[in-house]
Length: 359
Ligand SMILES: [Fe+2]
Image (cartoon, rainbow, N blue to C red; front, side):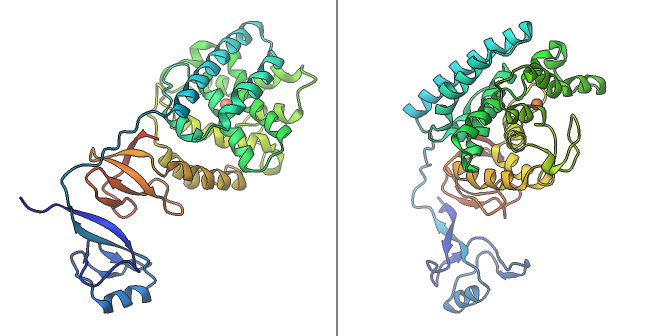
């Protein structure tokens, strides 16, 4: 049987003469320095250092034909998280159904839910990964409200908010779509794209939410602004008032990022869930001028750490572990496949991540 090969990254200091180059080496401006199959010599290594190349991919014979077993049993922390998360979502479901009928938000109950049920979930180790693994095809609005509360709270922590700001932010995240309880169910639950006039009704959820909470004298103004303005965008392209930059409250800017990330990573009736890797990249490429740059930077910087170690499925069907993320290209990390090949997806554009298997 012919030997099987894998391609493995080596730092330039660990590479030695006699090793075989497994992947073409390019300069920053894409000039080929060494082609695949070249046997390294001492002078070539000096040349690579001259070009500031820090990593080379080396071809190695696989010592064994066995595959890596990526199956990871669910941990006690995950089980606890999922159980408490489901309980919280059910409480939200019951409360929101009552709000639809009575048109009154039980503020004390909501504050208690934010403080006693959602804050512990925010502080759970690996929270972003747990959220990515939660199945949520049904009851989207209720899952989404809890997820946005959790992600907004995390973002607030990363941004250095005070504990009283965090309480307000989590409450605002939980209630950000509360106005949807006043939108007709046939529009809210319509499968497929909304028509223009239906979209206008749907967008009223921001002002409807504001109206529901207007009468609550004890509610901090920031919470109300977070709810009213979470679809406003820094470049003035948002709604309901198309305000810009500094006119948008900090809580609304934080909720906007949490809302987009959660909506894009969720399975919906009308769109397939994107991987968190692709969503993070989309936020950088397409949304940067619409969102607050500080909030986006802090989000990306922190969320990337959760992706290392995720087990993903590649477009060729193989499973792989994410082992390194480049500075910006979160969607195309370096992965180690089940058959022990290291692949830099940034260079191997024919392959992509299609889903997260476990996180
Ligand atoms: Fe919304």
